[in-house]
Length: 174
Image 1: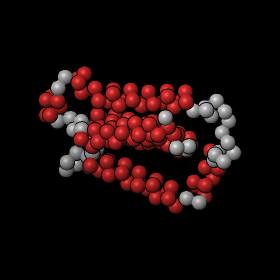
Image 2: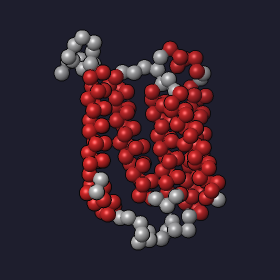
Image 3: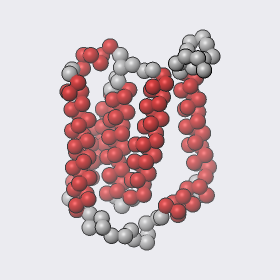
């Protein structure tokens, strides 16, 4: 059963990522990407990495997607002219609802079939303290590089979001 769940979640992750890449509306793309992150988190949990699954949901599906939505709002991106020709609104949401239902079904199956769901974690699982120590001592350089990349992305979004020919950001006076 675990193998079947793995392949279902893998198909959901690939389909959601493909939908995120092909959407013209940036908000729809972000919603599909969040769907893909949830599928990946369940795959990590299924593979025996609950800490990585939790971090996938907290960091990527939570914080990074909020950053993406903030950038989309700051740049005032619009869906374009093709948004009206895609069909009625309920049909636009059908793929994300189907992918979300597949993720929810796999989550419920995983919770029911997992024999260790109500037990304590074994000793070989890393505690959050051990994970934090390893992350900020052994991999401190990698963490700093990623933080600089996020800073550069925010500065770049601010620069791109400025009104043409002015030093003021979009959205008016400060």
